[in-house]
Image (cartoon, rainbow, N blue to C red; front, side, top):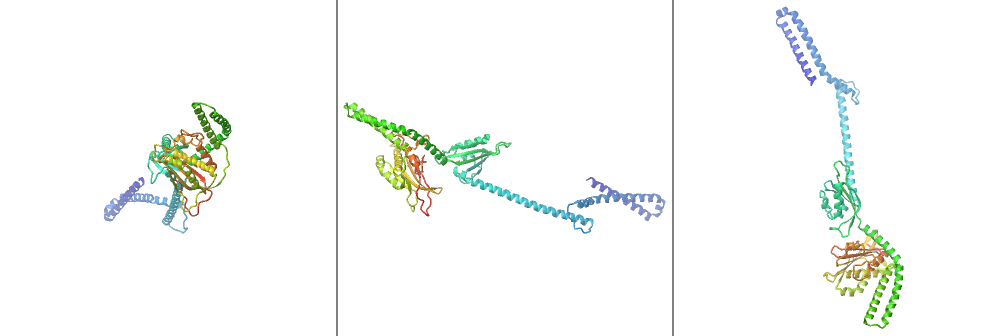
Length: 494
């Protein structure tokens, strides 16, 4: 700004003094007489004005040329390669700046290429991250700081029965089937507390008895603004928990059997002696009251003997006599034996099967006598579980074929329309001598569990969604599924 004002001032001064010299020259040309009189003065003024104007013009030119000189100097110092030809300064400056512009254009293209590559890498990393989340066998759910859903993979959608787009929904709405998990997420968002490997149950709307393993952690807990959200890793551990309980139960039963088998044997010997004395008392002459007491004593001794025999059958190790057993024929035999019980209690037995029609009959390697006794106990319990005041009086038997780890399995689900099993009793029903009946010894279910476990199978108990209890037997088949058949899925009756 200052240089521009100075250049304008010099231009005005140069113009003024040049006009003065021209005026003096005109005086000499037009009025020589007058010029002759004032000749010394006019000559002095002419020379002075001409000199000052030349100085102003020189300074003005110097100021105008200075940026050009600087431009040439910068062009000389620029890191570009010149053609080497002899050329004037303007051509040199033009060539220099053309080279600089070309370099800038090349660098712009390189920056664009690098930016595109970085963008592709970011897109690839994001897609890879999305694939990892989608491929996780564990359910993953993430919420922001306000509790709104941001990420939910397919296993999590399956666990919480969430269909369609759920982003933006509040965690209470997304996890409404798991109240315990809602409490964990709420505490994590509020305090940043981490929950590791928590076991929770999901009673509201989800499959009965389903158990989940959950880890809930805050997202970026070190943020200055507080926790930015919560991340949940959820796994269905229902089968693992059941297997763990079955293993613990099996070990407990084995220890109990080993410890008490000897005691029960000695107890049975004592009962045999009591039985003999009771029979002797019946033969001794008594009045009616004495004979009634002797009969009652004999009946109690027989009941104790039957209970001890049942317990010995449970506790005493027995060698399996394995043979090929047809599942359908085994069920037919059991139903024929229990036909009188079902008729006396007015219970209707309903059978169904999900095994395809073109498939060979399900056959298992089993001890027919022991497995038949276990199945009889389960069917008898199902019939006795239906109260006399209930209108719906059915026992449902459903057979199905399953396949797990290339091993075919035969499944038998026995369900009833009774009141079901209380949750507190579900963990105890396979323990010897535990019973909720007014009569019975509580050994039947324990014996059935042990027999099926010895055959390499599993016996589980649950409550069906429609009411009543469901006992599911799974036993390994002795032959593979027929070729070219679809693999049906087991569906619990009830």
